[in-house]
Image 1 (cartoon, rainbow, N blue to C red):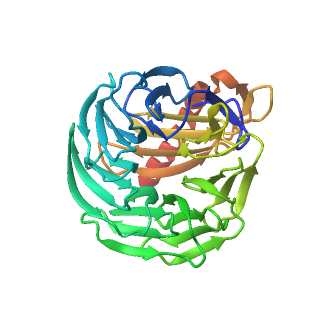
Image 2 (tube, rainbow, N blue to C red):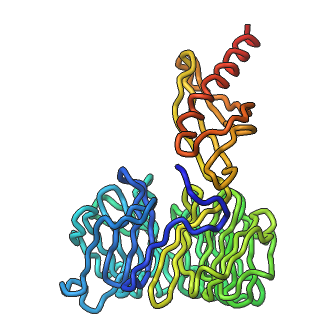
Image 3 (cartoon, rainbow, N blue to C red):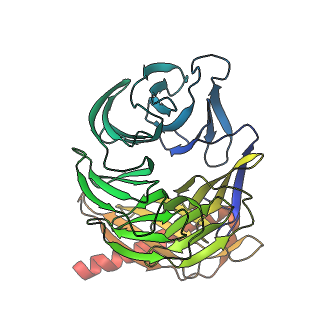
Length: 399
């Protein structure tokens, strides 16, 4: 992966379509290319996520298949697309042809606003304007309800499935953790003075959400819901929140956007110039964040999360030792030259068919610049010699 920009937040690609009216954006890796799906009121657009090349799409504007119904949320599997709707229904579409294969008209009594799928366990979770959350088992076009709960006092605005729990936040200032097996409530928190939570994100330690009117960003303990920290300088009217290993990404409905540290919520980077209107959706993937904008011509921006500009991940065989190699390089200057001095490489290797992997960190010592376009391949070859020395040193120590 090579990027031509090296500043955090720089726009790498922009997708613009005056006909967009976003209800959901999804990225999956179920084809040769990473796919970006855009769901409109009654249309589906399919793009290649790396460069926004349009691949396919379908419109139900003139077919009559939807009547007064409109699409609300979507998820994908290897063979199917699952779409929820404003009338509470659930549709199963063929991934390749977009043909509607099955329609569950009464999945919910009200608008099915949220839909999440766990492909590993063939499970789907939905949330509705009737304040209910449901779990479904999925087998191709067959969708079977497993349980329903109504712990929240308002319809859920965001939902995450993580580590055996279903996490939701809602328009009444509640954050809820429920057991994914039976829907029983694990904990419910409603901080004083909160009203609307619109976005939620979960990692191994915390649940993150921002109050849409009081501009407070909260981090709750994942296990018991106790407040870990709160920052009262978050964007007002926060619409979206996402996380990666290090950062929290926040966008509001006036075009403000922030990246914050996860440990304490401090601002790392902020911007209010690129987006002119609402940021409704944020997706973080592979060193980029995808961010939507609502104005006269709706857009999706692909922007850098950090300062890395070149990443190489490959398999190397050094004297019969299998090695997975990954290196991250910083751009040195505008002349597209890279300096290998101080490049840190993380490698894992095994010998003689052993299944135990060991992690080694090495630092290259060369300071010779290479042409930017060929550096990735040359770095791999250069690293063979570095790794060979590491392997030989380890073997000598074992002897």
